[in-house]
Length: 408
Image 1 (tube, rainbow, N blue to C red):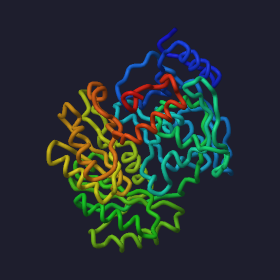
Image 2: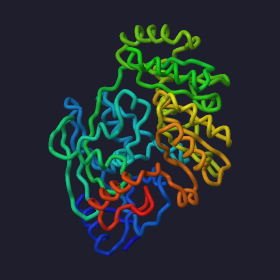
Image 3: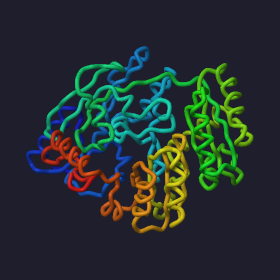
């Protein structure tokens, strides 16, 4: 048996998993492996490569729904729906820059399994909120389906929500159905300069609480801003606020936003092309992309209350060399730490525990990922629930055991 199994269709996937269960083998599930380095550095017997399961099986632009095999490249999906003026509104993150590989390698199934969402999450929701239906194979080797092809259905327990963010440890998805939405005709981004982290969070909160329908709110301190084209930072921090829609709606909303944020200083606006480039950089975490040579610094993805974000960063930065930038109005922090053998885990976990929220060690070397909690440690009751869910889908621990948590 080869080290990598490459099924051609859903029946092959079921057969491969059933064989692994019978032989007592463990399987790592990948699409294009763009997220392989996220999670604990566990050992598995074989790789189940789903990259051969490609192709759009249904696309109804008028119904805002698309179905595709799980290994279909995101780039292919986005090109297809873009031709109809539509998009995946949750702005799926391309992990290529963070891990030093060529971008646009992610698959539709992979982004749903990771539940990774970009800047528009504050308006459109997370990837899981756009996940309508799934066909998959459980760790028992049994094929099952859940959900449907409508935005709202009552077909039973919503397994899509369970599988989103499970990182391939519960089931191997073979086909998925997602909601698509019309793409904005145009966009502009307003930039404020030189705000400190706390002031920027207040400015973003004011913008998000206004009727201007802001769809992106990010703050890049000076060190991060200078690595993003289009910010015109000139060595200053940049706070960015995006408004999208039809052309006639942009100008009055921009005027309202400028008046609201006048206490925070003068703003400049950048147009459609520069705006899209800026938000792609925020989405793909390019300020902290891996260097072309040499080891990359540890990178944390922290979710917390926006008002507490600057405190979390300040607490860590007071004790080690750290850089950060904020997305989701301050609720998502990308925090990079250099020169820490333990990836700064104790410092980060302590700061997050004090400020509230959860943290994922998104990028680190193999030794750190093998010895540390990569995902947020669970309470005893939550860990017990997670074990029961894992056992119901995968009683023999065939699919990605210990990728998320030791012992499961």
